[in-house]
Length: 69
Image 1 (spheres, rainbow, N blue to C red):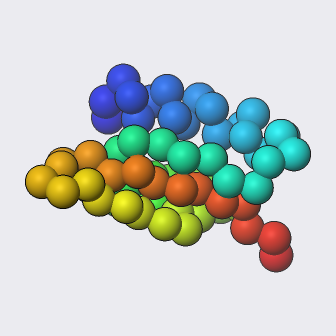
Image 2: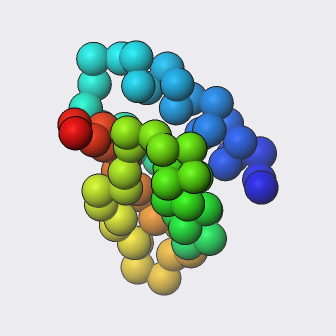
């Protein structure tokens, strides 16, 4: 895992407590996959709702949202 990825994982509990429905991060493809797997493994009420790739970019803007079920 990268430092950036670890920093995002540290932010997740606070995000779940906040009165905010979504949060955006800059992630690489493998980090997006790892984050989705982490949500499933930890049974977190979060999911990746949108991924926007820039032209010729290895980094995407990723939107994470809270799951209400």
